[in-house]
Image 1 (tube, one colour):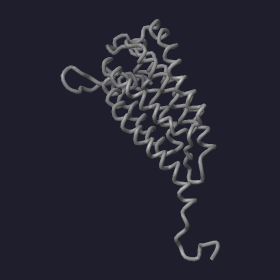
Image 2 (cartoon, rainbow, N blue to C red; image 1 turned 135 degrees about the vertical axis):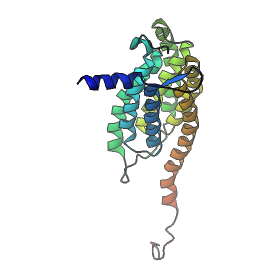
Image 3 (tube, rainbow, N blue to C red; image 1 turned 120 degrees about the vertical axis):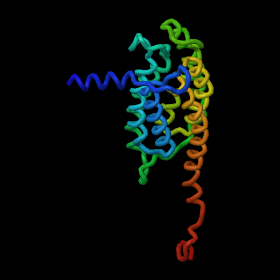
Image 4 (tube, rainbow, N blue to C red; image 1 turned 180 degrees about the horizontal axis):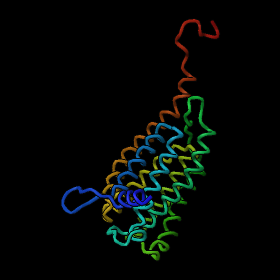
Length: 235
């Protein structure tokens, strides 16, 4: 049993150099890899995106708690980033169950647009949530600028909820999160996650396009006549 504990401790502390004096935590890289796989599953509208994402969230939770878990760790604590991993897990359980019930015959969830009232609620929620959480995160010692940490937390909550509901707009919320989250993470020294956010920004923009096409496809197929002979109902 002792060898297992030693192995887990070694994996927890494992790093690898990235040039100069910079090092990356293996947990941070692995957590983002699972997150990327989950994002791909979300773009493909596959249910397995949720459990894969939960694994990544658990890994990143240990990373962003920083010195709270490991006083020897030099990286600062980002409470917003850590808190959103817990939020991701909670919403992922909801999304996992909902997607299992809502998926179509081919095993995929059918995208839909949020209505006007829901869109307004998302925008107001992002702004009000950021303003409300900023002083709380600052009092708890989160990294400056604290408003950016609060923005990424609230935006991530709304984007994940929108994904669970199957709203195509959730991709745009992720873009807004990435725009603020990239400079925050890079300034805090979380290089792996910061550069992954840059990739996420491009990925989420493409995901938005993919979901729009998937949303329109059933309509096109319904309106287009079947070109095969003998399929005309009026023939």
